Length: 392
Image (cartoon, rainbow, N blue to C red; front, side, top):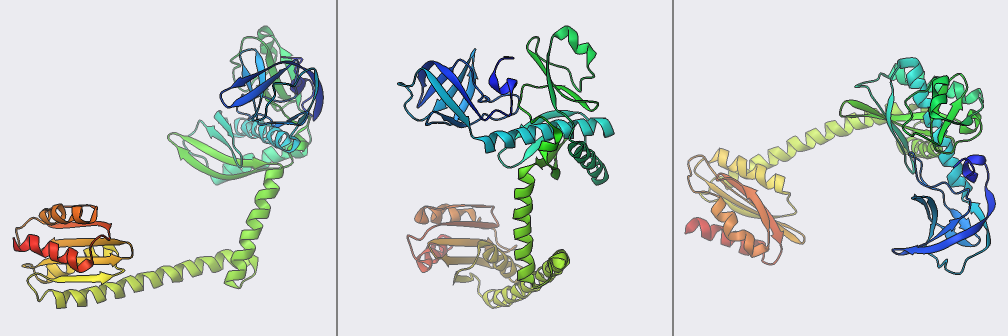
């Protein structure tokens, strides 16, 4: 393992090697080389991609003692010496994020004595799960500041192969799980950690680290963060969003948050007033419909929630009524049937009878049912079928 090119020089972008064998696995072909700079998936770090000669490599996995370079192209005729070239943008991004994770994790241990229990390097974000139930904003800021101080100091990132007996010489952040081929990644006087991933040669190459969010996962806290070029991409995206919001609110960017807060408050108040007015209209409709013993009505573009409210208002106004309501909502029909407190007939009989007519689904109880389905009959026909159940 010590002689693998991605361990000998993690900054190597191109290399030459010899083909050992080729093969096929499911719908993919693969190439095995006598050495490689392509990093296979492992230790929380995704695989490299790139090219072997002109063949695109889409995945790299370690299978027993082989490192297989997978492609969707035919590799059967490839042999002899090849030239490998990494997708360096992808590799360097992974190295930035992985080294940033080491730094952030070590900062949590140094300042707060909080260990990391898991790590995930995603396409857009990186996460670590902390073995703690809660962290404060002040603690997060202190840890982020410490991590960026280490990055700005541009400390050397060293790697060292050691034996199990030699581990006692190092102040390891956590126990090493492997028994042999033990590889340490070291940031002197800050972090000593067993790791099989690739990292840049100095902390300065991580660029910058930014914590974006936290979430509670059972009794742990998940930290979402990014490093390096991902920070620039996030900053550009957020700048674009902020500029757009400020433009739509007609305020300077620095005032956008306050303007948006006021806009949301106004919208919420308007929505509440509108809901109250809609209820008043429904109550007015209910009073008129409640004059009938079996109030029947159909509407166009009424939500099931509005039908339910109207039915409740009707039966409150007239406890002896049975309300039958249908809405024609474009390609589907929806209905509500409700009884007043003085009625004993179960409304479930209505839904049982009419749901098959519209290939529909519904639910409810003896006092109120609702449902909806395909518009294979008209709203009037559906109402007549509902009324027929009551009459019978």
